[in-house]
Image (cartoon, rainbow, N blue to C red; front, side, top):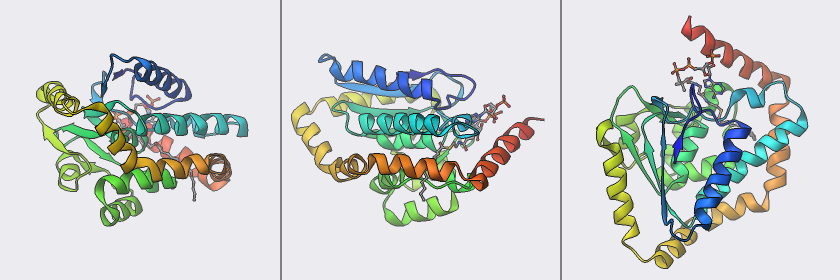
Length: 243
Ligand SMILES: CCCCC/C=C\CCC/C=C/CC(=O)SCCNC(=O)CCNC(=O)[C@H](O)C(C)(C)COP(=O)(O)OP(=O)(O)OC[C@H]1O[C@@H](n2cnc3c(N)ncnc32)[C@H](O)[C@@H]1OP(=O)(O)O
């Protein structure tokens, strides 16, 4: 599956809805046992949640948007398919979450590409299930430091801390992702799927049990004037960076 929402594959409500529909179709297709996620946009895997969806909108909109973010994560983290992220560009925040939610991450070894949960840099806080997914990949200490600092890690650093499983030259990314997929698909599906469920169930159950509470937390957090101001300033900073 190739993300193609230029300029930066930001995760808008439309993007998330289409992503979930595509994932559901693949999940229900008995012939499909695995999916490789990558980007058709040069240099960017995904710029994370679309910030414009979280700025100056109604409470109803925030609720709908956040439910779509939750749905994307719940479907991908609990997928019966083998999921491989072929990270061929920068991947901050929600983009990093998508990669973390997969079974395996391969990143192009370009030191200009960065990845991480940088929410703190925007003056916002990664929700508990972003944090749980991160901890499950890199461990508590690395996750805590990285989250508090809102670090964006260069590709080599991301590999060193275990955020991505391997680095390959960009032109070899597709072949390597295919080889990894074949390796994972060589195992009997039922054994791999039950193991995956065992490893991820507690974290998935936690969001399922607190889903509506999490929506309300998001709404009250994102509606605060101080948070709206931080997001507006961040968007302005992104635009200024260009000029
Ligand atoms: C205590 C309990 C609390 C509970 C709280 C609950 C929830 C709150 C947490 C919510 C979680 C949020 C997670 C997120 O994903 S937030 C999004 C974070 N994303 C980023 O920080 C990335 C920002 N973007 C960049 O760094 C760069 O754009 C880039 C991805 C590295 C690409 O750089 P470049 O190629 O140079 O492109 P530009 O910077 O020029 O961007 C082009 C264009 O796109 C706009 N844009 C970029 N990113 C986003 C985005 N995420 N959303 C919307 N729009 C984006 C950018 O403004 C440019 O627009 P213009 O062409 O119009 O100028």
